[in-house]
Structures are given as C-alpha cells and as structure tokens.
Image 1 (spheres, one colour):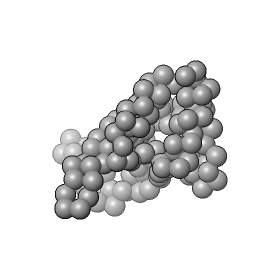
Image 2 (cartoon, one colour; image 1 turned 135 degrees about the vertical axis):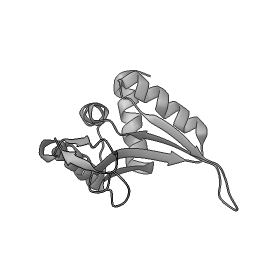
Image 3 (cartoon, one colour; image 1 turned 90 degrees about the vertical axis):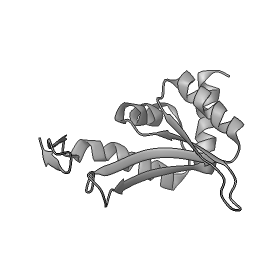
Length: 130
C-alpha cells in the first residue's frame, strides 16, 4: 500500500470508527489542562494492527492499549495519537472527511496556538504558569 492509499484507509477508519477529542481534564494533578487525542477502538485486533503499521508508514507516532473482556463485554483494542507533532502530522496527511471530526481536529490544532505552557511544581500536584 502506498502512502496515499494508507492515508485514505486511515481517513476512512477515523471517519467511521474513530473519535477526535478535545476536552479539559477535570480531576487529578492535570485538572484544567487540555486533552487532545485521536482514538480508534475496535474488537478486531487485526484492524488495529494494520492501523499501527499504517501510522508507522506515514510517520505518525501512537500508543496502543487493550481492555480485557468483563461480563458480556468483548476484548477492545485501542490506538491513540496524542503528541502535538503527531497530531499535526495526522492533520497534514490524513484527509478526514467527517465534518464534525474535521472541526474537532482543527480545534485541536488551534488550541496549540492559544494554550499556556505549564511547568510542574516540585510537589507534582498542580501546574504553574511557566
């Protein structure tokens, strides 16, 4: 699969099964900070494995996780893009078509322009303006 095909496949996967999220964390030491992430979660591990290979091919960093089944739930595998450089790269090379997801991705990129830079206090309990 060439890069253009890989990008188109990932666009379809994100449009259909993905989540583009920008939210403010409410609890814990990072309360008040923004969480920016593009996530795909599925019960088909092979598709997540393919997504990982395509992200790698396209030069986009990611993390993976899985949640074991419990009760009537099935096993779910997740792949997420969270780092600033990787979200910028994703926006540049993956042609997301879903209007709401396009808007949220644009909002993520815009949030980097207006975000405050924080440093952690020595006690690691709260951020302070740097």
